[in-house]
Each structure stands twice: as structure tokens, then as C-alpha cells.
Length: 131
Image (cartoon, rainbow, N blue to C red; front, side, top):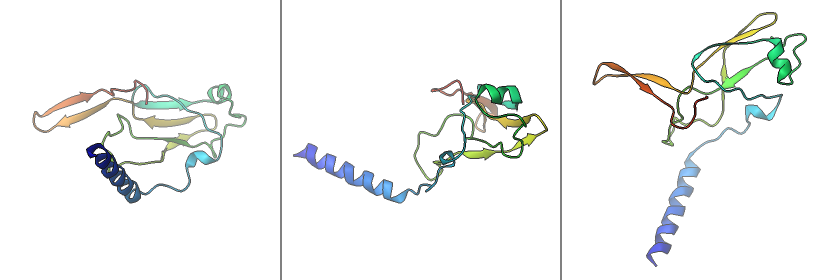
């Protein structure tokens, strides 16, 4: 009898949590041609026509007016589900030329300042080596 009551209470509490969250109605991944690229460290990355062609994207002429890059903040996703969670990707600003695109991407590992010790602390992503 106790197990049944616990399961019922757990189910009700999960229902209430889901009802409070809001989700985007449309995903940016719903339209267009998409390619997933892994980022292994923070830095500025360059995309050239040969790379796009190898990924199956038409690069002649270079799509500088239509190319968009989306991603997330670097580091691990929070294990805490709260209002700071997000359910869509964010557009990353890019600088384009006639045959290239430059963008900054944060890697899977982070540096944070610890105010208690006055030192920088390296936080390694436990789950991935690529963002």
C-alpha cells in the first residue's frame, strides 16, 4: 500500500512540474540544412568553402548571407532543472567574408573564479570532450 501511495504522489508532482515549464513551439532545427560540428576547445573558428562542400552544403558561391551558426553556452549543461534551463539553441554571431566565416565558440570545459580562495578553478566537463 505504501509503494502505491509513493508512486501516485511522485506522478502528481511530476505533472505539476511539467505544467509550469514553457517550451518553444517551433524549433530552429525544423527548417533548412543542418550539420553538427563538435568543438573541443574555446576559440575562434573559421569555416571555408571546402569544409562546407565536404559536409554536403553548396559553397559556390559561399553562402555568407544565409549561413547561420547555432549552439549553446560552453561547459556542462546544468544538472538542475530550473528557469535558467533552455530548450532551444542560440544563434552565435559570425563575421563573414567573400569565402569564409569566423565565429567564437566556447568549449566543453570552463574556468571560473572562486571568490572564497581568490583563484581560478578549472571545471572539466564530466560527460564530453566536445561541445
